[in-house]
Length: 389
Image (cartoon, rainbow, N blue to C red; front, side):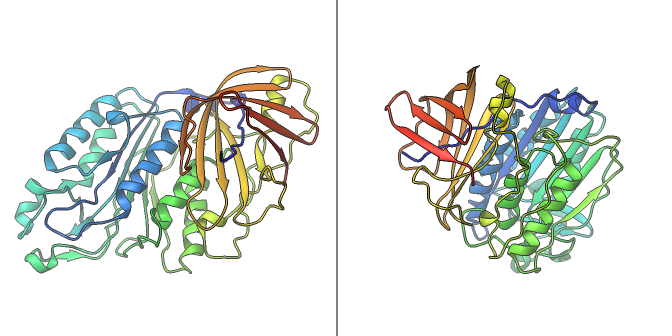
């Protein structure tokens, strides 16, 4: 059994920023990779699945109930229409796309699976204009709109007669209350990376889960991480209109947001977040939960390292666990907090990925004491003990 960390029930938010955190959040997440007429892409399905899980853990309602994978033109159009309906009256609207994307004469086009244009005149009928997606969010009454494009790739249709397409994507004007994030600078192309996820999406998922980062600083952290991992070759870009408040995806946290941890090796997955110290002698149930947030040793007590560490965070009544054990993908788990009594927390496992023995549905009991915590899987009886790094 891969051990899991615990995360605390929601941090109490008392400022005007709380309204956005507690309001309704809607997202459309699309990953297109299984193209029929141009080379296939490996990453988008994995990228979209990772972002969908991350957003669900942050309380987002997803169009279609999860990541939308490999959409043709009809499916893409329908998903955008549904998104436009669901965002009406929401507080936050978020659109994420990974797949082929290109600019033609300054307009950005997102590529459905069945697209095969040979002339610019065919684009309106075979592709999706990114501005169309922006228009679904404009006038919806949302407080914050986010468009995230991990689609800055070369024109795959250049050899089929579609001319006038420049590399990467063009910078778009961000409407009021809108932030647009590109995987790299306008006009440049982004890397897919060597793993299942692109460097940009991996960094995005990790920083979305960090409390204490408003969206502007969160995307700045994403850019810093990607720049490091690509040796400066790829630098994400943000276009934003003025935002009238600070917005936190994972809550404002208990204090000032920490600075990015130094990354001695070029791997986004290896960056260990710096977690502010918390009291090890909590006196209230909320303190008990807060004491579980941070970096933790494995049950074998081995020293924490760049690639062997457990990271715990909480949001919306759920504990998020990330166990890293090497250069591969970490084990990610989400557990719903069912009760907090004294120094004991009981949870139910809702999601458990990248582990040979998924434990979805298991109930777990955590006991917190002065220098660490222990867990008992109530289904198997296995016990683990963890101490802070």
